[in-house]
Image 1 (spheres, rainbow, N blue to C red):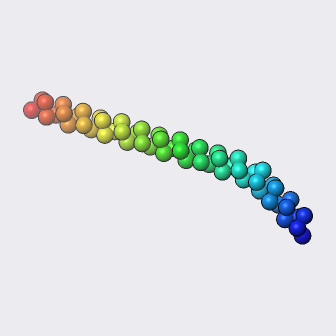
Image 2 (cartoon, helix red, strand yellow; image 1 turned 60 degrees about the horizontal axis):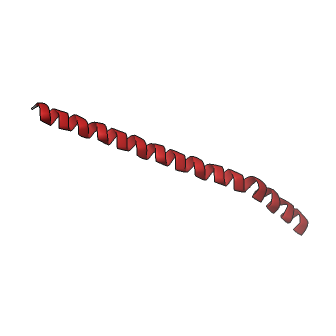
Length: 56
């Protein structure tokens, strides 16, 4: 039983750690993309508002 458990744990570590790292990197990348997009959108909105106010 203990040998089977060790086998399972070793496989879990071998497969789980890289998958976890991959998931974390993907999540970080998506978060950065979202922040970047939001920043761009806010910039566009601010520019439009400035232009609109300037035209008036």
